[in-house]
Structures are given as structure tokens and as C-alpha cells.
Image (tube, rainbow over all chains, first blue to last red; front, side, top):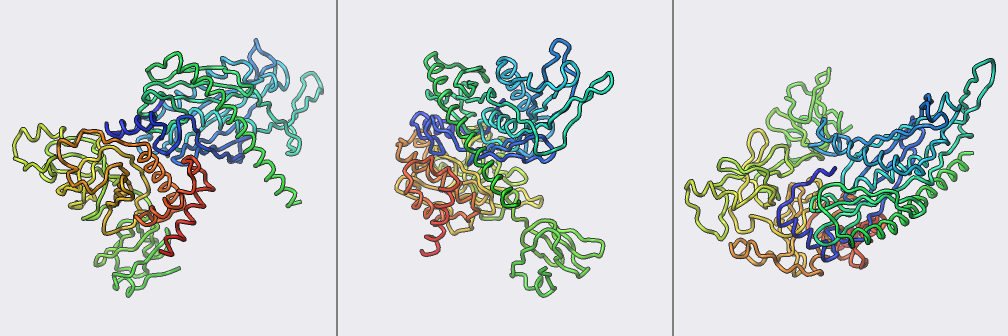
Length: 292
Length: 285
């Protein structure tokens, strides 16, 4: 999932030494997370979108949500669908052109899909029901990686949550005229339905560099990492999934303390997302008051 | 629109800055070079933003952004990507890989090199793939690729430290690109936009001696945090597009000392504050 950067033996040793001394190359301690910024509504023709930017030596990720009315599966007539996809844009840098970077996107897509499949409470697909057995919403959550500065999975999950929080579906009414009921989609921008996002989890990735376990690794640290663990935590602080990528292993103690740290970290991240989105909402409200 | 007259172009020394689409000259007898195109009325226009350069009748625009365009005598930091026949290929952030000939290096310890086959077989011992080196541009070939040399004690392999990559146009050309910023930290500002910060003082001229080469210097936590602080300061200066040279970096460093926690320096508002203060400090001094 990670494309390593080229490092010399000495740089590697310096990075590992830094991690062990708790002074990483950008001065953070092993438990410190970079700050991120969120922009909402960046794609005008999507139902919801978000751009997340991890500061300094950045990772930039953009997610857009599109919706469509589709026929549900036969065995689940009153459930909608959610499709996830993550793609790596060639603008990330030279060496990411063509299909050479597909595996990065595919790896993360796989992880995100697995997360939502294995934790059934993550997304309430019943809320996407429009007309049971006939037409339900299908959400396409597409993520594009625009810059790589490490810690991709975490940022992708933040972007997915932010974009879904930003998503507003048009209100639908069922008109029962004649034999076949018809669906009327309202085009009134003031009455839209917000999606319930309380269950959508975040991911905290831990890397083992030297003998220390780091959160929010940069790309050069990822290159030096010997093992990598993604801990998926939801808003209530419950761990709803764990994945390992790359080879390597953690000691049982490291796993336990890592999970604990991930739960703490995710709590701060949920709060931070909430704050940032609220700040944007307040800002937008003040503008709309100003305009009227 | 600042149109350039023939006198402007003939003056030669005057730097003319153009933006894409701007008319460089309306006279038809100029030839278009890199970064320019002629429109249907035979007006020469710029296709990139940058400075106009003229050689006889050939007009080029040297772009501001983009990869490093080398000049003879530039100090650069590069990464060895390939060991080949009597030469190393070095990534210097230029459009093409630069070349370092076996004949244009100083051997570790200053040993005189004998031209032998053994020597060629030992090339990987000198510089291996992935290693960082500092070098000087010896020659610029016709296709724009560079030939480097390390025939001085100050150049050679770079060992422990951190590399910061910045856009090359932010590097201010200076007399010296090697600086000791404090008693224990030295900084090498490569003209190609790669900045190397290392815990070793540059005064130790015995840098290249073979016995010192592989020994790990004791990097104390203080040195590490100084280096990390410098990295963050450079990133802050870059995000506000401030020219990088010794004074701007050390001014920013001085200002950043107010914040004892290094993670504070990653916040945009703190970055803005220290950069603005550094600019003021720089202007006064």
C-alpha cells in the first residue's frame, strides 16, 4: 500500500534513532498527530464533498459523494447501497503516472470496503430506502489522492466521514397514482435530507519504527517502518476493525498499548472534525445572513 | 502589458519578467526558444512565467517554477540512483539525471586514485544507490543534463541528517552554500532546492577521512530538536514563499525559539507569525 521513498542507510538510521529518541524529523513525539484542515463542498456537481489536507509535508485527499436511485437486491428490499472507491491521481508525482499507482488506491479501497462490510453498524443502509423493493439510493463515495505525505488511510477515512457529513440528498415523495407508485424528487435546496454519519469510523495507523510505535507517520518514516497496523475506531470509542499491512510483527504489549492509543487519538480526531465542520457551518450561515 | 522592445532585448542585462501569453516582442525576426511560442500574427509570446533570456536572435523564457535548471558552479545535493560504467547517475531534481564520472571524484581519505579496473569494481564502495551526495556542477550538456564533480573536501557523501526538499526557485544564490548555524548543526543549501541539515560541524575538515566515515556521531536530543526546528522553519518559510538563505533561515529559527514545543511550528497561524517576524528581523539587520 505504501510506495517507499528512496533513503540511504544513514538517513534510515537517523530516522529510526529520532523515533527512538522521541524527536521525529519534524519534531513531533511518537504520539503527536499532525493538524489537518477540512474544506467542504469542493465539488459542485456532487451531493457532498470534502477535501482534507494534513499540514506541512502534506497529504491531500478529496472525496465526493454521488447518489443514484437503483433497484435494491432481492434479499434486501429496503436497504440502499454504498460503494467506495479510492484512486491515486497521477498528479501525486512522477512515477505515479499511468497504471503504476493503481495498487495504492486498490489497497485502500479494499481496506475501506472491508471496514464497512465487517462493521454492520457503520452505515445505516436502511436510511437510504426510498421505495422498498423498487428504488433505493445508492451512494458512490469516490476518493482521490492528490498529494502523498504519508498516513494515507487515516486521511482517506477522515475525508470519507467529512464528505458524508456534507452530503445532502434531495427529499423524495411517493405519489400513488394509478397502479405503479411513482417517485418524485424535490428540487428544493432548502429541504434536503442529511445522512446519519454517527457510525462512520475513523482509522488510526500505527507504524513500528525501531522499537517505538508511531502514529501519523510521514512517508520517510513509513519507508523505515517494520510493521504497520490500522486500528478502526468509531465515535463511541469502540474498535470495529484491525488490519495489518506490510509484513512484520508487533509484540502483544505493543498491540494492546497501540489500540489504547488509537482509541484516544480517534477521540481527539472525531472532536477535531466536529469542530472544523461546525466552524465551516457557522461561517456559511453568517455569509447567508449577510446576503439576505 | 510590458512589451519588450528591441532595445530592451539588446540591452541584454535588464531582466524582463513575463507571464504566460504576454507578448515578448512583435518583431518578426526573432527565433522562438524554450518557453515561448509565436501566434498567428507572428508575435512572440511567453508560454511560461519567468525571465526572458536572449542569445543573438534566439529568445527563451526561463521558467520560475518547475525542476532545477543547472548552471556551472552550482552547489547541489543529489541522490545516487544508478551505478554504471565509470559513472554514477544522480538525481538532482533536474529534468534529466545528472552524471558523476568516476574521474571527477575525490576518493575517501584523499587517496590518489589509480586508473585501474579494480577501481571500477569498487565504485559501489564509494557511492552506493540511494546515498546522498553533495557536489558541484562541472558542466551543462547540450540536452540540459548536468555533469557533477566532488573534487573538493567539502563535497562528498552525506551521512546522518535530514533532507528537506523545497522548490529550487526559492533558493537565493549566495557566495557560500555551506553554513554552520549553531555549534553543532550545519546546513547545506543546494541550489537544486534540496537542503541538507546535519549534526556535524563543517569545521572538521577531516570529514572525508575513511575512519570517520561509518562511525555514528552521537546525536544528542538537543541536536535532534535543533535540526527538527530548522526543518519546520524552512517548511514555514517555503509555505510563505520566502527566499531561503542563511539569514532568512537563522532569523526564522531565532523567532521560532519562542515556541518550545516543536509541534506548534506545524500550525499555520504559528508559521505565519514566525515568518512575518523573521522577515522584519531580516529587513532590519
